[in-house]
Image 1 (cartoon, rainbow, N blue to C red):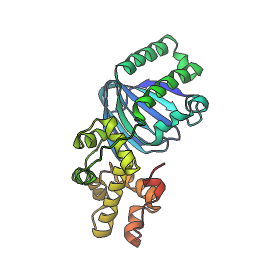
Image 2: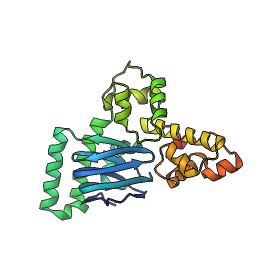
Image 3: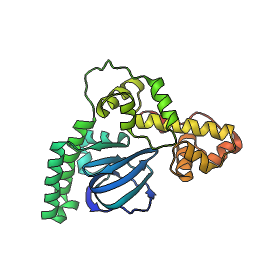
Length: 266
């Protein structure tokens, strides 16, 4: 199945779903809000997000918005063969901003699609997608040089705890650590073995687990206090991490450790 490149506005009413293909969303006009498995952020013109396959995500456009969306099956030519390393982009959700060279490439891509709309679903679309993915990968993968900067994880833990009920972006954490977002991602993974998204997700689930064990709060309130957009999002995360719904975890006191696949590295 080839890559598919689409342009469309997002509904201003909050929607949610997941799908078995990867996705990149780039804002062309206006604004949109995304929450991808607990990681929240905003997309404005020339910024975007990466949505890995099978990740539940909530999204809503704001007013007059328009987005460029790339649907990328795992077996798409732009992610296999010579381009197989580009699949690492989808190890975890993230938000990004296009720099000047990528903005110029986006202009070129949009002109190509306007000149030949059929290229959005043909081999040419895969070539356009592969170039964009390659440029993003080069910018987001981080450097290979050793980094001696040690993050103050206790300070970050306190910051996460204070803002657990809010949408937290990697940019929020990077600012708390007084680092650029790219540098922060690199340091964080080197020090913890996890992406910032995986770490925050683990904190959310640990807090939800405590509340389920120690309180009789409604599940909707547990979800709100731990940063899950809805009770449904909390239920999905608990089933994935613990193999049980929140109500069953509470009923049977089954509060074992989260599954490593759900919370650890890839």
